[in-house]
Each structure stands twice: as C-alpha cells, then as structure tokens.
Length: 310
Length: 234
Image (cartoon, rainbow over all chains, first blue to last red; front, side, top):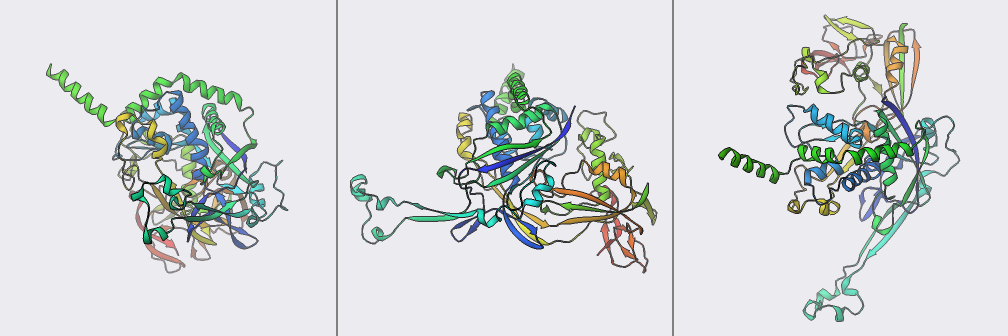
C-alpha cells in the first residue's frame, strides 16, 4: 500500500565542508540562502537539495545498479546520462509511451523515486529533498518547527558565522622543484625571462568547520516499500563525501537518522537488493530499448535489409 | 461549514518563482489523489488507444479530465464561474538568484562506457551540456489567501501539500505550517471594493486596484482555452 513518509536526518561534517556557490576574486564562497531572523535578513550556509539528491541518492544508487547488472564498460552515453544525471529531453514530446514508463517503474524503483527524463518524455519522481540546513541559532526555530514533537534544536547554540572558516592551498610550480635540472631535458629548462616567471598558484575559500551539523529531510510521496528500500540502500552506499575539494579531504561527513515513519530499515534494504538482483535482465533490456545506441540501430537496419533482400 | 476564512501558509525555505493560486493548488492536489495526474493516459477522456497523445496546451479543454468539485464557493461573474478565493498575497522580503548545477561527469563515466562509445563529447551544448542555471528565489515568510468555503475539506486537501512553487524536489518552497482564521467579511473576490483575484473583464468603475489584462481566471490556468479578457489585481 503506497504511503507518504517523512524522514529526518542529521549530517555531521568530519572535515571542513566546501560547498561553494561562486567566487569573489580568487576566493571560493560557500553556498548560502537568505533567512529572516529577528526581522533581519541573514545569509546562512546551506547544502543545496540538488547536491544532496545527487551525491547521497542518485550516484550511489546508480553505481549499485551498474555493478549489480554488470553494466560497466557496456553502456552508451544516453544510458549513463539517464542513470547518473537523470537524462535529457532530446526528442520532440508528442506521444507518451506509458508501457515504457510502467516497465521502468516496475524494474527500477530508485528511478520511480527520483524521476528522470527519457528521450522524449519527462517522468516525475516522488521524492522531495530538503535543503541541508545548518544547525545554528538562526535556524534553530525553523528546524525545530519541522522536527517531530520529541525532537528540538537548542537555541543556545552558536550563530552561523561561528561555523565558517577559511582554507588556503598552494599549487606547486614544477620550475621551482628541487633538482629540476636533473629531471627535465636541457631544452625544456626555462632560461632568461621565462625563468623568472612563477607558476605557483595560491587559492583559498570559505569552509564550514568540521563538527558542524546540518539537518537533512526527505519526503517520499505515495511510495512502496521498494522505493523506501531504494532510498535507504543508496544512503547506506554513499561514500561519505559531499561538496568540493574532496581530493584534499574536504567534505567528509556522516549521516544519522533522527526520526522517520519507518519502523525497520534493514528488511527494506534487503528487499530492494533482492528485487534488483532478480530483475537484472529486465533492467538491461529496458535500458537498451529506451536508450538504443546508434550503432546497434544501424546494425539492426542493415540486418533487416539483408533479411528483406534474402 | 461554508464560512469566510483567512489561510496563512508559513514558509520554511525560500520559494522559487512564485506561489500558486489556491484553487489551482487544491485542484492539483485533488487530481493527484483521485489519480487524474497519475499518467497522461488517465488525463484524457478517450483512453481507447494505448499510446494517447500527450496532454499539452494543444489538447482541447473539453478533453482534459479535471476535477472541479473543490471545497470552495463559486461566484458567477460575466457568465463565468470563478472560485471564491483570493490570489496569493505575499511580501517579498528579499529576492536573489541561486544556481542549479548539472554536469555529466565524463571522468567517472569513461570506463563505464562501451569501448566504441568512448569518444569526444560536446558539453557546451546539446543533451550533455553542463549547466549552472540561475533560479529566481524569493524569501517570503508567509503566503495569505482569503477564501469562502469548507475549512475542514480544504485542510484535508492541504495535508498532502509539503511545498509551493517550482523546484520543490530540491528543497525550495517548503511549508512550515498552515493557519486558518475565521473572518466576518468575505475578502475572497473583493475587499472593500478592491479586487482580490483575477476575474472576467467587467466594466465596473466601482472595482478598485484592478488592471485589464489577458489570461485565465479559472483553473487550469495554463490552458489557452481558458484565456480571456480579465481584470487582475494590481
């Protein structure tokens, strides 16, 4: 029986978080949203719902499907674009193939949840993702108002600006490397004016300090247990990084469940995994039918032609 | 009980684009619940064919299945029935632009692609275009509607509405709560002679705060068959 679920989670940063919105000069600025606090507009750090949806759900979920169905190295760009980015509308949308949508929803519960774009039709999803709201004094009342009655945020916590810090890194210059004369070919060594030029690059930006907390929320509208399982399964497979500078260790986080309408998560994950494992062939067939590669099409046409000729 | 009400929707997160009309919101929710929005096949009366024509602005209004039994009273103006609910009333505290990013991650995908699909990919335009799309965002603390109708049924319908505006799937326009307040006066269409919602054009100098325009004054607001000369609040 389809049901609507609300899931409340907490995200804790274990290393500085760099979720940027733009730059000012050569400084990366963290993403912020406008909030009214005590009759004033404040711009508070926020993790976009788009990033949460992609990094925590779509990407790990798609990775699992690719692995489970042994699709790595066998897909075309459109199939990958659909699985990892939700696809693009590239053909005119005059008819709607309901069979295709129904097959997708039956075999791929994750994509029923997320929705996506087939080549000529948009399929709506059933998941609404909250933006990640920083737990700070300005947000305390807002977050408490959506939490279940037995949970609340202490309003005596620090204001948002206390959670913002800076980072600075330097990208090295090979010319300045020790013993460059030994490593580089003689004619590659800079001489004269060129030698004086420095290619060192200093770059910096804002971060959210490690140990900060964000509220995450999910609303699943009229979903079955399989879709619920798909959500929790994807969350459990998330690699723990969000935002930029992950290669330098930024954005390491962990999530924990605060409250939800779901009683037990583990059986849902098991059921979802079993479903995917049992539908491998259907998933492959659906992907191939919906996003045929151009070459296969040509080959088929050629084969058909031969058959007709014979 | 049919009474006059003021509905205040307290917002939790900034809203993308603008809030909808109350009758449109209720009709969308009701259509969802009775399955009219489930698929395009169900949206059309003629479901004989397996692959029906997609529901678009070109579909005649007579063929669009819609549920007009909303718990709101109606008023007939110039021969057209309009629901007795005001347009959304809100104050924009702050308006700014946020960005939505989308990128086809070629670096991660390279090895997943079939050997013959590993080729140069155009990412400046076309289906794999990288995007950093601006979204117009408004910080609106509350949205107010005045309506005459059945509060219990309206509340029931709004129970399934979690967010307003565009980009609800990524956290814009989340609703904190709904507040209903009973009113003595009916401000749904006119408030002391001031126009509160779009109505069919009537040449009545007594109506204040209105301007002549062209558009729809009843749901579905997007359908061109509903377009006519209207008076809209200003």
